Image (cartoon, rainbow, N blue to C red; front, side):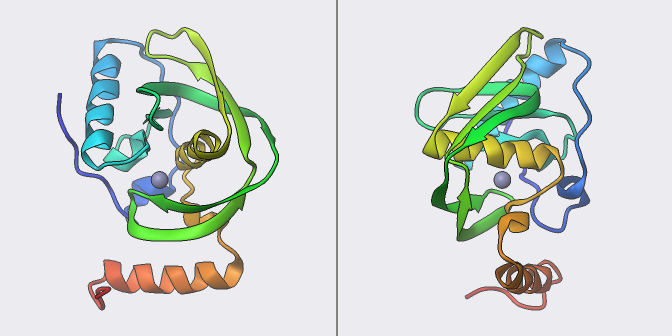
Length: 167
Ligand code: ZN
């Protein structure tokens, strides 16, 4: 297994819609294991393939109930509303209160190509929506209100250029 560096804000792979996984082979199974190891090392509760520079429709997760993964997911249902201080391994050490549906259900396949459905409320529901967004090339910044997003982007761009560093 291997721990990969996590791509951060400013890396184009994070703003690119990921390609569907087509080959369900040993390399894919290894990628799932490596992504889990990378996620646990970070540590995080979810990690999408673009975050390690692999533009594929795949994410791994563990919200405290054991490891899982989903490939080529579709968001099939959301409901309710929940505010949570959401963060992202690709936008390190920053958190914003973000309102999203509380519940989400995704369907896709596992690394063997077997159809799977994953659903959850609150932290699980949030993680599912957050990772699904990554695969569409969208970061949590897209979920901020306009003025908060503007300020966050200004800070992050300055930081990425090395103009300023927080603290
Ligand atoms: Zn993220």
